[in-house]
Image (cartoon, rainbow, N blue to C red; front, side, top):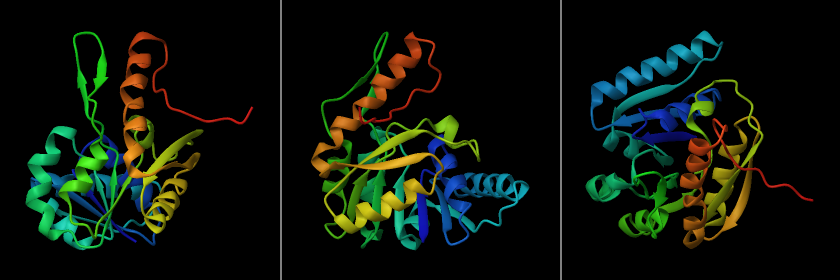
Length: 219
């Protein structure tokens, strides 16, 4: 699978790039507005992987290059960049699966809070109708993703309207050791999980819980 990370130089981009590049069947594309930054980050990820015995296939370039060459595109950008970046990239999207871990979050005086909107629906409304938008990864701590062999014990809730697109994202999630993908329903319900991210950050900030995440248990 050809997997592109728009804004793939940040923490979650680094973590997912390293995890998915362990699979020699995947080709990973690291994107940025700054081509040199993308190149440097791609070289860093390759170095980490080769040091651990993997032979990754990683390329880099501007975000436009990443979109054109990928089957799956993960948007690793802040919510504020959606309307700034995506309209310029819109014409380059065709039939890709687009994964959104984006949270419409902001920091108030003493807390993290979530705007009363749905980031995933905003993305869907900007991109062409042929694009399948899937929402996931809102509750996976980026620092642990970046630890190449860290084993999770948590769940990832997935939202989307296209069955095959969700199945593809399920597969990518469960390639990461210890993550379980759960179906949360249609894309319109993504706001339910987007709002959990600031909750987890507030818990971390106020309690002795370094990287809180979620796991659903059957009692």
